[in-house]
Image 1 (cartoon, rainbow, N blue to C red):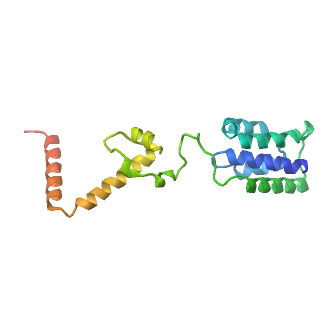
Image 2 (cartoon, rainbow, N blue to C red; image 1 turned 30 degrees about the vertical axis):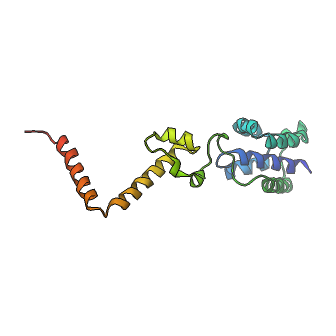
Image 3 (tube, rainbow, N blue to C red; image 1 turned 45 degrees about the horizontal axis):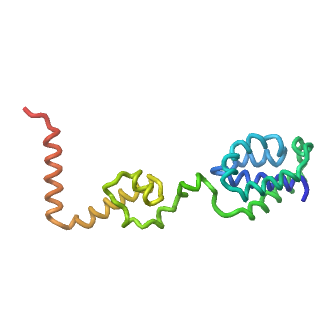
Length: 179
């Protein structure tokens, strides 16, 4: 494997660990002069590397293939093509999805697999989130959906409509200034 391809593989890992990925401008800049922005890119993902030992070992293996002179080299168009080849080959080796957040924080979309019947809706969103292992936002969204389901379930009941109208009257009557 040549130097440009090695750099491409390293930047594929950096792109994988960066939330939202690297912008097209940063990827093109890295293809032209990989060592130039390497320090700032590694600083962004260094914390995440500690949580993913397998990816950390992979990037260390690739970095050991580079010499000091490779850190300051600029790539000509042919080498840039090899850089992109390495970038996309390494991207194919990486797992699908991105490792956002810590292992304790659920990845977006994980709330669908939760058994919401186990939730105690008298607790706060934070307490339910901790108990079920989802984000507070997922609990809040489920709470809104649950309220809509309850309204739909009870909307055909005449006592529900009368009670809700009476409750509305009481709330607004208290808010009205007395003469």
